[in-house]
Length: 339
Ligand code: P6P
Image 1 (cartoon, rainbow, N blue to C red):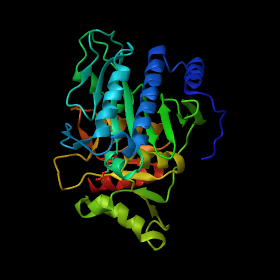
Image 2: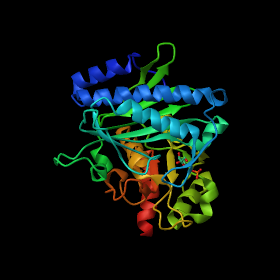
Image 3: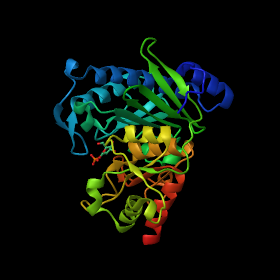
Image 4: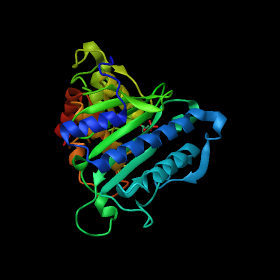
């Protein structure tokens, strides 16, 4: 993707965007700037690597039953501490915390809810592969009742904003407020995120798929049908060869799709049939689906639009197929045909 914009700062972008579109009220602008500053701090911690005693296991487990990495815990604490005093939030929810974190009474409460996976792909941390922070912003229900988990259980189409920050060769923040997608690259000399891409668009067709092929024997028939056709290449029903990528860090795989198209899939499989999928709806699939749709792509769970799913639990999981629209439509059609 070539850089086609004047590199203005994130702050200038947010002010000008609000002046132009009115889609970023003051508290939302403050929230995004605070999250961006937290991502800068996380990027610094991530970049220390072995020099900063931040690698390895924290010897604790999260609500998912996953062993937490030290950086998972650090990133979570950075986001909580950065966001609880500003008066823009009522509460937060994180992949790393069982329950919601209500803004303490010593601080003013705002109308927004912030959900995040503080460090997605953390199995890649110790081997120096790109990881990232994913976040989603909802508005508290206007019901005059004290904020609770019920306020968070809104379909993804209700999001006020969503984004991720990928900690890779560059630290890049990708944002949407529901009127397009913009990318900001961290200028470490200035310490500022600078606009490097605006109105990001994903091509509707692609020849690149991302899936963990080692799970193939556990997939459903339509999932196997779609991948088998991709693998059959030019001589097969798709009439073209496909390439494959799998970074095992959703943020990095999605960023590649944002940058050059593609389709990412983490489908249901029969190892744990009671689970809809591996990825989490509220703070992984919903924010990524919002961004992908805003860039002209599509995102389904194989049957329905992800952004239309009505959550029932804070940490519920979902099957995910997202990226170039025509490919997502094809794999979704196969699932629907299979019933
Ligand atoms: P697997 C990372 O743990 C994550 O939640 C996503 O970022 C990533 O796409 C997926 O899991 C990788 O899962 O089973 O391939 O290790």
